[in-house]
Length: 170
Image (cartoon, rainbow, N blue to C red; front, side, top):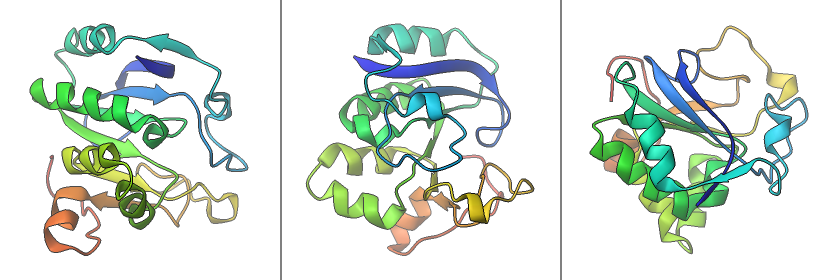
């Protein structure tokens, strides 16, 4: 079961291409100026089964990928990792938004293997908290300048953060 704030069957603002977006419920970051403040309360939203969510995703043949947003997807890492496996089985790429930095997720992943598994199964990570003082409405797929678009596969292979240049499609 996943605790969700919502599901958008098509989006062009939550990552490259046409994507479905899963909004996870619950976020420990509580960033001032948050784009989705209704998703912060871990007791809000609604429960949905993994099977039902996969059925909803698989009905849309127009998407090239899935985005996990929030709230904080890594707050539900075991369920998110299970969903990521299903997404990849459908031939879709995965973009994840997180208020954690990549480096912090690596540390958290040492005690929670589902965090590492989720990172390894995704294409891009938009990392870091939203900072109102760094807001920039001209950035692609990000709200503030401190956030990065991390190419996860290259980063994990090179063992250094490699930012996505927009040159591939996962």
